[in-house]
Image (cartoon, rainbow, N blue to C red):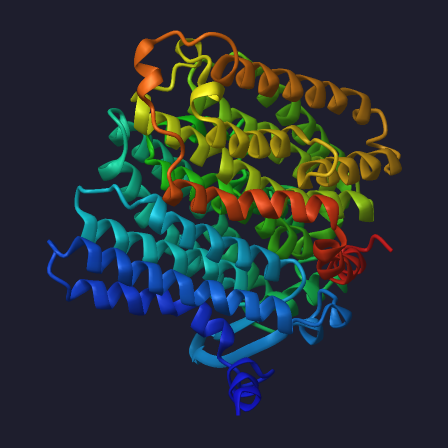
Length: 522
């Protein structure tokens, strides 16, 4: 009986598993809407259930997913849901997943579930806070499952307002400035994406097949039927399309020079929102490149791959050096994200399978380690009410369990062997070495690796080692059960995929190989 229910829910054409994962949070949001605003515990419990169900379903999705059917074509997509939505403009409700999206859907559901207990101490506007959190989850998940460009754009825009208000209302002293800066940067990227979306539809219509179907558009681009003979201001249509989409997604990654919104957003955002922002929201930029940007303009991608690799390299080194200069604990972690996400772009720019695998692996690995790092910062901020690294010291003796969990997050971010970050960086650097145009970049990228180790070890020294610089620190309680429960799953994943990386690589590899074929790299 259970097998029959699972088959009905998760079956191929006609299954609704992806819709359930995507929209259960919306149902939770609607339930909370009718709960009296003073019933904080009930609201939090409903939010926990509304994020816990998608998490359980995302685990089921990964368990049922068949990597052997991998690829990057419509036929390779699994758990497909496809219905006409706005037939006049050939817009479809078209969902599906492959080996690239399944792990990120799980990561998203896990982080949103963790965000609920991490937000347990939020007392201001509890009802509105958790409603926005659930709306945000639907927007993020929708981007990972949408295979219609117009539908993807709707979900992409859906993320903007919840994040704006979560930072602008529940953030720190400069929350309005950080929220507006985040909004403007993201809106600029959205406008560029919208221009690309409309242009692609109009060009496909002129080619006789008007569609927003990402799989069909990628096939048209691969076969040279998507604007091959069109140019604007003397530059080919696909070149314009590539750069418009690239900048739109690069802002979200973010990479230098589109990164300046990130430190402000992280510093002012409440800890659970920083976890979501670093852990999964940034990954939408890399995922968008793989799903939309590169497949719709493969020739331009191959032509400008070296530029992308250089941008990634600059982000690695620049982010590491700037992180080392920070005194604010949270800002240090924010700039470390700029550095670590640079590996994603370096891997993609290598045009090598191992480079792509390293970049994709890094998106997941950084999602777990960076989320854990922000939770680490949140624990100490709740006690000390400041984030000045130079004012800490000696906390390891007073808070040994906290120091132990924190060490896992720190070493995962550092790229210690047996941790997932090491696997990601190793694959990326090997892939870069395989690429003729990126081989020389490996030596410079190693500088970023060394600097990363330096600032992380220095941070451990300043926070946990040496004498206590304030007698008040002796009164700090060790990490609570709630705080440990938030961090422990992330630490476990950092170790699990570091020791057994094939668990993730085997899921992604067939889809990456298919993508390489779509991009003309085989």
